[in-house]
Length: 321
Image 1 (cartoon, rainbow, N blue to C red):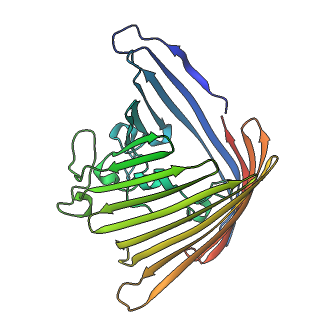
Image 2 (cartoon, rainbow, N blue to C red):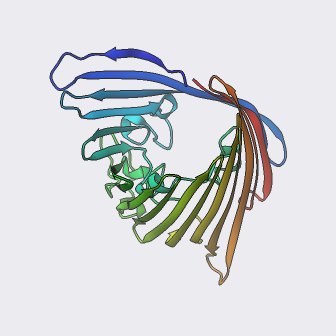
Image 3 (tube, helix red, strand yellow):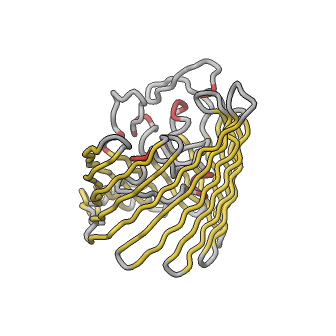
């Protein structure tokens, strides 16, 4: 990806800074989406700012946010200035600490299933994304999430948390629900072991009474990759008070020169509110990317999911600048 620098190397000649740099990059896409009923055009363009620096003592620090995240008028309050959009970080000998709209420890270790389509899964409601209790858009009513990462040899350790308070102050907008779920501390712990061609991870997360235990592994064999994820939940309710019991998923990919083929399967099991029954939701997706070079990729995907009770398709070109 070609990056245009506002300042290739902006040296600050004051104590505490050795160098600082601001880079601007972006992404865009254009294509078509079939939503099960109609074919629609879809396009977007975004710009991202990445700020990095290093102190005289060798301490690295930085931050990143997209232009669309700096929106004070948005109803969801996702703003880099409020800590609920973008992120800032500091890194040194004892690990890396990030704060903002960051992933939680479980997601940092495990991640999601493979994205398909030129919209990277959003045309189907992002069903490839695992439901983590902490971070990455959750708990925003408490302001920034904090994530700590430390790696020694082949083992990486992660810890994340929110502050357990939605009290409004002059840079953070909270719901101030006075005793609601947004007032409860959310935290996550995870460990990951990486071998030569595989990794395995274990995580634990908690938000109020809701608990989550995650187990995942991924391996690569020549041009093939396969990933498995299993998440076990307790007292994790959706907006209709149905209780999520577990999520299981498998994903695979094959790289052949400029062509990348990807697919996934996911199943979520719920205990239904007000009944003695349960229900399973299955989602399947397959897609292919063709690298055109220079940051342009021709991509398309098909997803069938019980959540939409339909099959949806997208195809188009995505760009990185």
